[in-house]
Image (cartoon, rainbow, N blue to C red; front, side, top):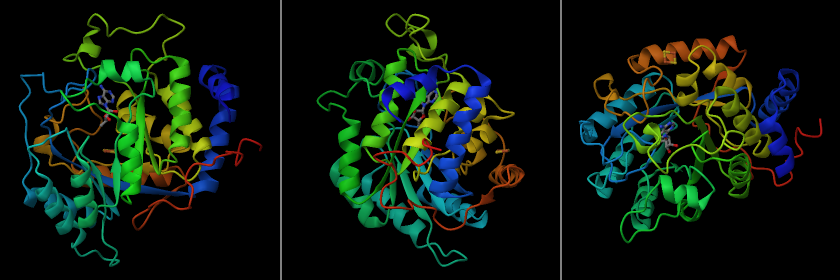
Length: 364
Ligand code: 5AD
Ligand code: FES
């Protein structure tokens, strides 16, 4: 699929034609990663953040938000809960929190990797801790971490600089960091928000092509959801949308188109049906994602008492559901779709997640 074809699909509105895209994506998913849906338990262990991303409710400039950082024991308890619920992976996610010391993260990773599981296969550990130094990333890899998630958010460097200001003396280059993570031996994941103000059609097409160029193992795509306490959410001067006709809308359908195209470009990648999509469309979001290319869901393992403080965007799906409730609910939804819950770590399958030619389904 080339850039023009991607753009044509992104702009397609006819439901019958779109059915063709969903079918191509579902076939590519079936051929690339099979029918298993992997559950990754999300542990949001710290809401502290030193960055001021213009879209994110955890941004450090946002004073009234009370912050938390879980103790290592609390994090390991959440991981134990994940094992009890049958998950093969835990994802440790935070704001960018230098107060979370690298040796402490390494110790948490070691303790999680040492937890006994029924199958004898240890939990896979995915880190999503923001932009950290190379020696820290190497330390965590040695401690046993398997994967790292870092969304590049947009492939447009000007838009990125506007919505994701660098820290003084530390220019932000997420694509370079992803490449270093790969060299260190991590499976790498990235992604974008669909419909972020300033995102043009061509920008989203380039984002999708960059997924393939980076040969990502994991791709997270969710709709942009405005947070009223952020510059983008308020529409502050300089943070408004493009002219109508140029701006990509932040709809559930547009998100599904991006997920479907990502699947066709990267047949073997692990692609979640995101919580943001379920938030925007609580009735059908999770299912639509799964039947239009996704093969992963990320139920929340964070203790309910902390959830509201991890306020990236408003009205997050399943905010008050306990880990047990979500696990049961998701299993039911997956089976309803005629899919099966994956067992084991559910890591990258082939040698190349993203096909350089991407003919797998497009020719069919
Ligand atoms: N709407 C949707 N997604 C968001 N994220 C951050 N803020 C928002 C928002 N307002 C996404 C970013 C980040 C991930 C953890 O959450 O893409 O990388
Ligand atoms: Fe959380 Fe259904 S997925 S309650």
